[in-house]
Length: 551
Image 1 (cartoon, rainbow, N blue to C red):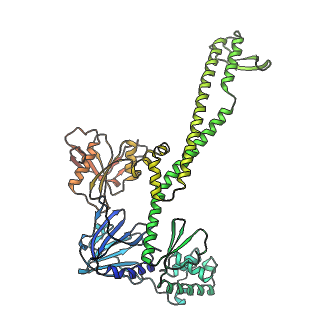
Image 2 (cartoon, rainbow, N blue to C red; image 1 turned 120 degrees about the horizontal axis):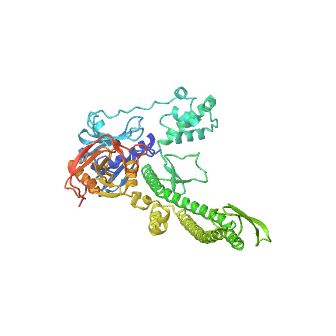
Image 3 (cartoon, rainbow, N blue to C red; image 1 turned 180 degrees about the horizontal axis):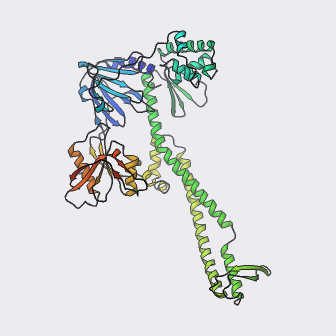
């Protein structure tokens, strides 16, 4: 419900007194698919932060101004120093406009597969687009598509779809400005329990229509709240949600303004996502290690619980030494009375090329080796039990952590104890195991350290629009110039600096000049069955550069 029409409309209403008359001071991106606009009046400053990436697109406001020093791309410079003259929503559509003096206008579309933010001129043509700038330049920005007005029961009936899976889905389709949360609330308030839209009676449809009308009136007077499970935010709503009230697993938290509720919900959601992204692989690694070592210890215990083969080998050796003439020459086995079991016959396998005494010596040696192996197995079992206990203790401590800050402290404090249970790439800063060279302006070169890492870098971490580099005709590391965004176009100097790094980490490092392949990552593929690090480049340019690391 964060980018629902009614939520955006409420935010516009609350933000207008502050933002109209403010001046655009900055526009930048310091996270993938996220845009920040900095606005200020003489006495106050704000930042509008928007994300165009699903599944959680958002728009919220915070006070003050802050910007990272590295990996930041400046955008929309034509809007700088222009005053905001208006803030508004498109009629019955989720497009938000920020009008600027001089006819320029920001247009935010935070929905659909082509979510974007545009800077347009007075004629509605795109001056700059946050996403796919080259494709949009000079074209008309998407026009609003007002949702149908469903003001009467007859209009509601005409839009009722019996081919939807649930009554809630049918209601959301009939009322296009309602999302699933609002539709579920209308169904609850109407008291309709029929799940199949085709089976909903006319009386029930009338009840649904009236419940939806009442909700629309309530949405004009928001009483925002967040429903959370523990610390994790689950649902944001502009109004009371009776279908969630009373649930034991959810806590309801009311807010005085939509602005504050949206800001808290988004920040908590981003924090929770960041926490889960760091927590999940660590929890999985510890759980897998504990289960692995427990299973190993159990297998070794079962093996050790069986009759010792060393004792059997030694008994056979004693019997053969007691009967040095036993068995004909070339026999593969001999049966002798077992002096240790009251004369019961025992069959002893023989090496036909050896005498009885030589076979006895062979079994004495096998008994000694088996005892040594058993001792080693006992040591390994003890080590497996120790490691299983260590992983389990760390896992128990990890599961008591519920904040990102506490998780980072735990990882730092227990780094040495965690290391044996983590894959190499998980033990590096930010989960990135490569050499990293910042070049400024949001550009950074990543370089693989070995063939396995080269594959990981090229096919797991590099994005399709990043620039892939490799010294031509010689062995070396894969290098990737990470771009701050899809529209970034690095200059020649920056490309040569990046290529110089690729040349440096190649077998041609000692050469004066080295040819380096430069291509977009999407033109690099791995042939089926090729060894680690081996690739095929389908399209390439070549730069002649000096092997050199950045100062």
